[in-house]
Length: 138
Image (cartoon, rainbow, N blue to C red; front, side):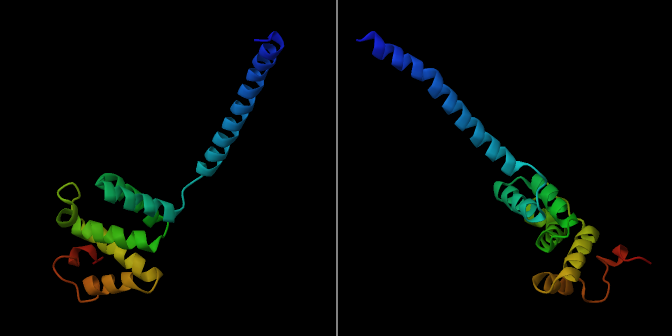
């Protein structure tokens, strides 16, 4: 093998390594820029649905609460249903909380027309009953 060819090949390696490193770093920087910043309520709701799919009910509840507090009606509706149905839907890992569930359903119903109003009316549009009477202020 010719020594001139060998020198040319060995001289290319550092340059190629620098180019590869620069390309890699730029891709990582772009990926990190897309992941920075706070999540939107819709993204939090999507994470709650993903946690539900995976059976991680604690994470589901955490993400639902975060999205519901940010006034995301689908998250408020789902959080209300989760809190009302707790053990029946998800087992003993999620205890039922009728008062908080009612509050989230009514909050969702006040925000938009549609399924949340139907659910809230079906559950709480009638006169107080023994299950939710204690949730009302005296």
